[in-house]
Amino acid sequence: MAVALLGVGYVLVFRVDTALALQERFAEVASWKPPSEDPEYYEEMRPHRRAVFRLGGTVVLAVGGVLLAMWIYGTFVLGSVSQ
Image (cartoon, rainbow, N blue to C red; front, side):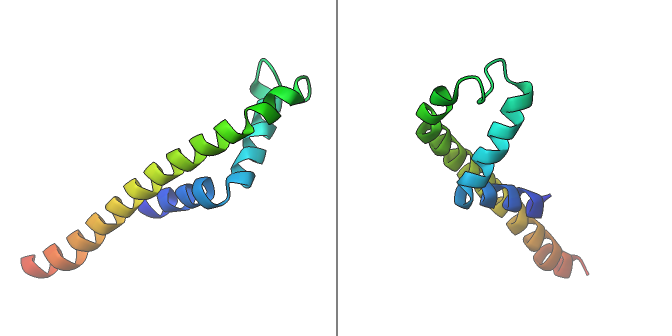
């Protein structure tokens, strides 16, 4: 779980253009206002969406890091004490 969260966080923080392309592809199918009908709206909102992805990715990276640290601590520190 921690590795999956770290991977998603990495994409959201460091590969923002990939995340934006995936979002626009999904919006083409699911949105009430797809990018093909109103491209100006999506270009106008791009800086805001980029900032939201970076903020969310930072949170996901932090949670993944904490989970990974807890797993390492529980496996190696607490595991060696109980033996």
